[in-house]
Image (cartoon, rainbow, N blue to C red; front, side, top):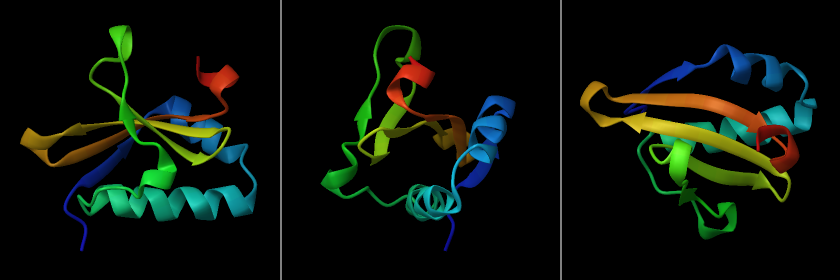
Length: 90
């Protein structure tokens, strides 16, 4: 069951359109886990970001396919900010 409502940025929507169907399926799997409030498996290398992105987290869907997201616990909201390669995001 979904614990968090999902909201996506316009940047995320545009980046998602560019992904292959296979990568979209992998992304959905990870987002479903995050939306349920469960912790990701260690293979996703989920971690907090620093500096300007200190309120965000990043996980690796694939070695060079990153998802940048944020939880708003007070609103039970999962905000998907960006998805793409490391060079595309940073």
